[in-house]
Figure 1 (spheres, rainbow, N blue to C red):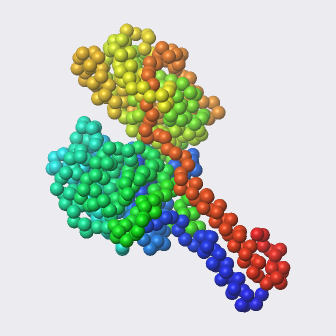
Figure 2 (cartoon, helix red, strand yellow; figure 1 turned 90 degrees about the vertical axis):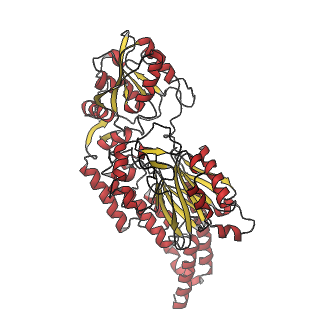
Figure 3 (cartoon, rainbow, N blue to C red; figure 1 turned 180 degrees about the vertical axis):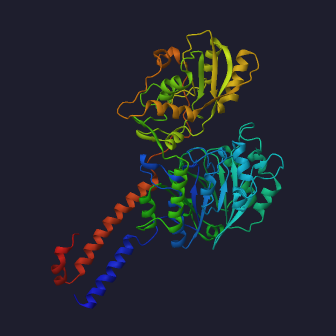
Length: 587
């Protein structure tokens, strides 16, 4: 081949590669303002481990963000939309092990989730001098969460995200948390009250910004979203782009709210990296006949290394800082003993399977764990346990580490004696009352599960886990007509699990899950009274993302285009060149 022919072929192939997008560009729809979203990860900063295909951790997220900032000529911001605690063994009270990991991420804005303010130990640790909130330096946004004593916001009311090309007015709200839920150190102001405050309305009227970002730890369909949108429209006008980031419900969702506003929720437990892009007001005003679908874009990226690499068009994902963070997370987990194998599960136990299915996590707890580890020979003991506040994830087959247990049962709530010598008739009424709301979405898994043998005695000692104490206490006081004083006992949810696994799952080939007496482990319905459950909001997550499907379709289309282009190029080569080298190429 002559030099001229070589250069012509080489330049043509380069153009073909560029056309086909073979590693030469970012495969994302970027706009004026672009936000990388992490929400509701609940301390899953180390990823999903060996049990699942989701294989990224915070180090990979950091690497992805660094690559994106470097390669894109647009403004890119990184945010966390709340609930960083309660989910894995890295989450403790206070979060002394989790905090250093969170602070290694270059967040542009972080807002508060309900789990982040449930425990006073967490609030005190975050707000201490030199703590998480102070180190974020104004990036922790709590537009409607205030310090109960000072009346001042726990973090900042709002801030401006300033990029190279844009300025974005940003708020951080949480849903209207019920009074009495959460730490007494903080108070959640109702959204409908906050939007009438002078500081909120004045911030909108300044108009020294290009777009608005409203971080909201609440569901996309929460009525407060419309309250906020209406208030923003009144202050900023109908043509100001407004992007809502939602959370809390643990779903992937995208919703068009009005002509220039959308909402995005990006999954949970680090199963999703969300990307949302939106225009500035100047772009809106300068674009004729434009629609929200043309200027607002979003992607749900599955939390896999291959997905992030393909979207960036690169072969190696981890950056130096990203690799350092990954190593730091693994070292922290090892130092905490979370990787220690404590037993071997004979099968996968699913969070949302009906109570009497063999592979039901709640069934395992109800028929084996509590009878053998807590009730034992004290047949007067009954446990009434809420479904939604107890467990959060499946328990997988094979080796079980301490972290696996804490993922399935992350709260380690204390057990409480609600009352002793409660008449059996009152407990029957209580069980029916707590399960009075019926929903057919998941029959067989009640909202509250009564564990133990109710037929053996005329009175029983009734226990529950810490989170459910106020609800069960109130209901039983109304039924029994007397005040109760629940007492904390020396038993904890995760510790009960650990005791069971260590004693009964030492050998995978010969698991022993029938050590309790026949009476305490029977599955007769007369021993377990319940109604019909509501759906567990935080557990149903779509397994296939629109982003993944779009990537596959685009990839397939690109391959077809590349084949056609390659054929076109080969036809243009000199016949002699094609014939000499055709045996080396497969088209």
